[in-house]
Amino acid sequence: MKYARLTKEQFDELHAEFASFLATQAIDKAEWDSIKINKPEVAEQELDVFSDLIWEGVLSRAEFLEHFSRNHIFLFQCFEENVQSIVLKSLVPETDFLTKEGLQWLSDNMFTENIEMKVGKKVFTEDRNASIFELIQQGAFLSDGQLFTQINTIIES
Image 1 (cartoon, rainbow, N blue to C red):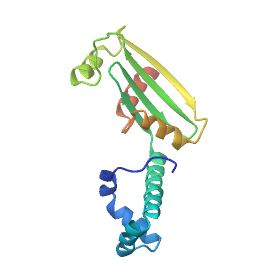
Image 2 (tube, rainbow, N blue to C red):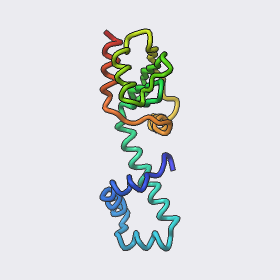
Image 3 (tube, one colour):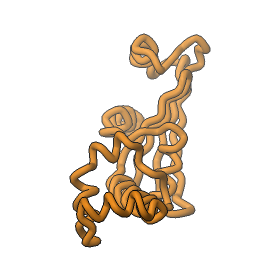
């Protein structure tokens, strides 16, 4: 398995897609039920293969990621060969970017001495999708890129 198995909730959401996946292998519902009971290791393999297919599709389309912690915000834009990052760090220890108030504070203090901003670029040294998946495993989530784009536009002007 290249990535991680989808959760039960994710499988529930992707029920129709999973049924289609099984159908491409000529496995109908009755046969799937039989496999789960009589060959659980085969069922596990099918779940893993499907999970990897879903992850591969999601990661291939991933363009923006965000990761929030108490005092840091990491913003990423993913390209084919590299990832660009903007890291915002509060220099005021009591700031908490995980709260609405913390984000309002960020908005009010974005370009002051209270915020340290670093911009970076990293070339993917391994598989692009594996690198993006690693960021997700560390707490990043896919985003529409609005925050990255807004800040990047101001930085570049």
